[in-house]
Amino acid sequence: MYAALLYDRNGLDGPGGSWCAARDAPRASEISTARRACYGPLVPFDAILGQSAAIATITRALERRRVHHAYRFEGPEGVGKELAAMAFAQALVCTDAGAEEAGAPGGSSGAADTRFGCGSCGACRRAVTMTATEPVVPLHPDVVLVGRGVYPPELIGGKKEASEISVEQIRRVVLSRTGYGPHEGRAQVFVIRAADELSVGAANALLKTLEEPPANTYFVLLTAVAEALLDTIRSRTLPIRFAPLSDDVLTRILRKNGVDEARIEAAIAGADGSARAALDATDPELTGQREAFVTGLFECLHAPDLGAAVRFAEAVGAERASVAVGLRAVAVTFANFARQDVVKSPSDAERGAVSYGLVLDALDALERNGAGALTLMNLIASLRAGRQARPGSPPRIVVTRR
Ligand SMILES: [Zn+2]
Image (cartoon, rainbow, N blue to C red; front, side, top):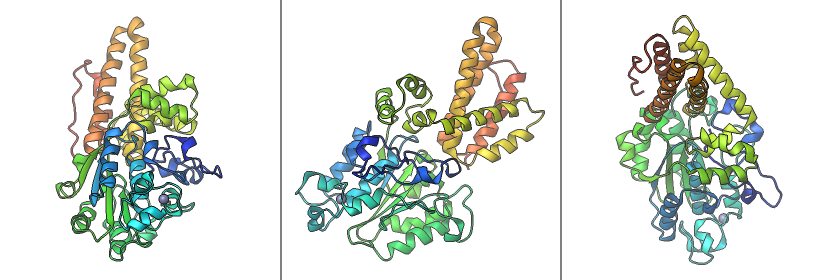
C-alpha cells in the first residue's frame, strides 16, 4: 500500500546505512515485511523529482505559515504524492530547535530548511520510519497513516476492509486521536492513502473534523481518483495536483535506484509516467506476478464462458494499483502481438491493435472509477466479444461507479 517512492536512495541513506527498501509496497501480499520497513531517515522536499509545481505550492504555504488544514494530493499512482505528504508531515512535526522556538508549524526564520523539516531530528526521522511489525505505520505518534488494510481487523472493530476504508478505522485511528491533540506538542498529521476508498460512512464520519479540525491538526488525502471522492470531502480539502512524470525524470529515478541502463527504456515504456510502475517493471518478484496476471487474463479469454473471468476478477480486482500494473503488462503483450503479426497475418495484427486499445480504455476506466474487478470483467467481456466479432466493433459493457 505504500505509495512512497524513494526517488533518491543515496540521499535517503542514513549515516548508519540502514536504508529500507520501502520505495513502494502497494500490495501487502506481494511485499515482504522486510521491504516495508521505512521510507528512510530523510525525506526532504528536494528528493521529490518532477513535481516542482506541487512542491512549490506546499513549501510556499509552509514558508508563509499559511498551511491549510486539509489538503488533497491528486494525481496518478506512483508519482510522489505519499512521499510529498511525508515530507509535509516532517515539516510540521520537526522539533529542530529553530522550529520549536517558533512554536508553530512552519518553523522559524532561522535555518532555511527548518521550515521544511530538518530531516535529521528525532521527530523527522520517526515521521518517515515505519514500524517493523503490523500495523506498518510511522513511528512518530503524531504522523498517522490511514488506509484500507493498514490496520489488522482486530484493531479496527474486527472487520476485514475488503474494498473500503471503514468507518471503524476513522473512529479508532482518527477521531480517537483528534480529541486529544498532538502527542508530542507541535502538530498532528493524518495521511489518508487512497482516500477515494473511504466508505460513505467513513467519509461522513470525517466531515466535521475536516471542516473544523482542532488546533495543529492537519490532513492530507491522497488519491489517484479524485472524482470518486464525495463532493463534501472535495469541498473541504484544498487540491494540489501531481502530474505524471516525464521520461527524463523516470530515467533519473531508475538510475538512482540502481537499475541497469539496458532495462531503463523498456521499464519507462510501459510506465505511463509512474515511477512506481517503472520501478515495478524492473522488479523480478513483480515481474512474476505480472506474468501470472497476463496468463490468468488470457485463460479467461479462452475459457468456455465468463465463469473464469468472474473468478479472476474477484481474485485480483480488489487492488486498483495492482490491476493497473497487470493491465499495462497485458497492453504491452497485445502491442507485441500487433507488431509481430503485421507481416504474416494482417488481420491478427489488427485484432492485436484493437485489443491493445481496449486495454488502454480499461486503464482509463480504472482511473476514473477505481473499480478493479468491474473494469476487468468489462475488459474480458469486450476482448472475448472482439475475438468473435469483427475487429473494431466489439460490443461494450458500461462500467458503472462503485
Ligand atoms: Zn526535524
